[in-house]
Image 1 (tube, rainbow, N blue to C red):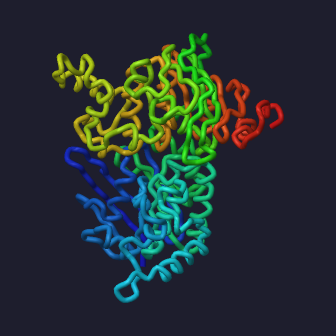
Image 2: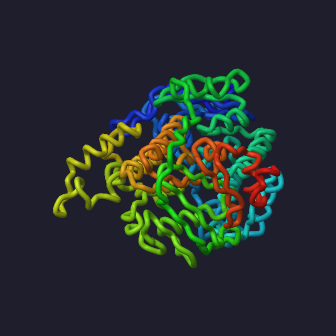
Image 3: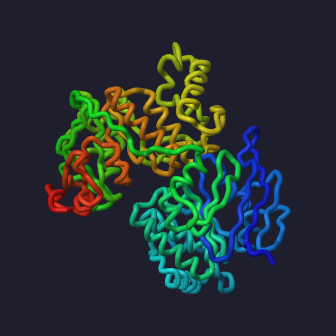
Length: 509
């Protein structure tokens, strides 16, 4: 009897001309957390989708609990105890939590649904693994962290004892991530086996028993957590050291290019309403906005960029009053925008990489002339962006849906930064991307600043805010609780202000 509940040997998988996995190897023991790491596009998600039966393999061998699988479908994987929580949740937003959990596997009493039995069954998992969810709320009414717990309960209800988590913390706050780790430890203690796909090395070192590394579709080895370090893992992932601390250039700042004056903005959540906020960004500086997710960051960005109505106050971009103007008008005034949700607001995943790169300027020279598209100019620009921003795969005619999350983010960053606008709004620019891409995106923002743009940076990563910003503004429940130079900031004094500490609280932290 093998010591492994899952074995994947010599896996090869191609998509057309692209070889996504060249030499895939992976195994999983009962009752362990085994992390699979690599850069965006390294093949780690593809490997696990092959195990779950979402794609057929070209060659190689998959063995589940001693059974060699000639072919595998998602239903076959579920029947053999494999469950997968995808990076993009597979939930129906207008159904309740309970309805989503039992969807497709509804218990019945005769011809009728047995909702009492369903509720009792779900309660067992909630209590055993301490997963707090609200069964009668719609998915659209719950937090991202709670939605993820719903996905985990779904896999358990279907009998999973092997659970694959694809980039599970990409959209979680630090507090939600810690709650997830507690749940994973509970699952492991009960004998479940966890595959944790990630690129966040601090989290991998915290949660893993073993760690496997992939680079450009190839298996680079497996190590015990006790025998490695973040530096060692980085070198295995990328082939070189990575430097996330930016060498800041404290040049002279220029004129005010963003002026938010006593702005009030509504929200569905009381804690997210903007209440009389004023802030500014000058040319040649990065202003960071720190705060716990859900305290008005999204509403502030949407108000500035024309995606949400301003109830009172003014938004001035490059000297022009753009309050409640259209996105097109605000962009024309001198703004570029990296949105926090690349899939919902940054990309059309059905369109090609090239079309997404040129979409906001497709009616401008050199991409069109007298109303006629200039495809050669679009191709030349796309080829330049793919090379400059290391977008993989490099075929810009592929649909953006074929890209990993991190490479999709690079498309958004490349498009917005290359326009060289005077104001760049960067909202969660490194969310869900690997350590190599984080380094590149951070350097890109610093370069934009050095070239004279003003950058408003919103990030849930305090280390990123401190590393990149010149000035930092902290918000709590829609109000500014403090402002300081980045040189004065640390996680303690920022954390106090993020929890509602009064202005000047930095001195008392």
